[in-house]
Length: 125
Image 1 (tube, rainbow, N blue to C red):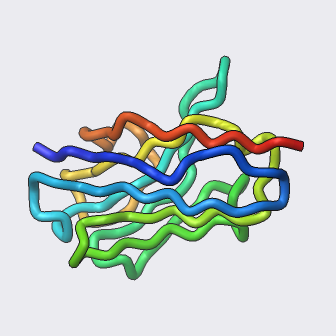
Image 2 (image 1 turned 45 degrees about the vertical axis):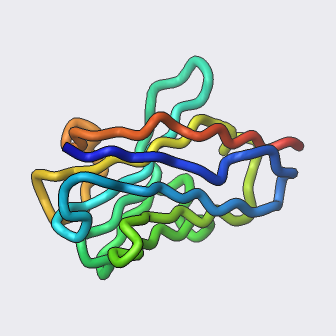
Image 3 (image 1 turned 120 degrees about the vertical axis):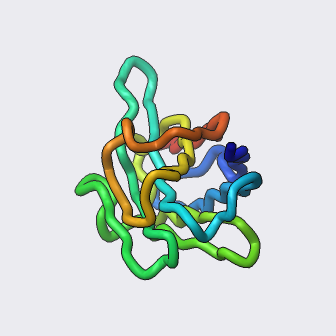
């Protein structure tokens, strides 16, 4: 079992930045990959970024490439998502998720067995 708790969301103006955090507990954090997803009102959940167990390998959706950085601190059992140059279309509930079946990153939401409750990010124009 893995428990995930996100934080760091909020209201920000377009062009601003936010850093989301996700604290994990339960299984050994460094043994599995982590990902961030988001869901905007009326839209399906979509992949944002993923990171391998050691943090060496990362993967991003085209929509955030160059504006987002995913990282993890295995000593703190925490994964982060730094978002810069935010746009109104980035408005969504952001979820972190754990893929305990693999140490390698993935953009496939079906791979992720554990999810946080989500944190709201709202970008005003």
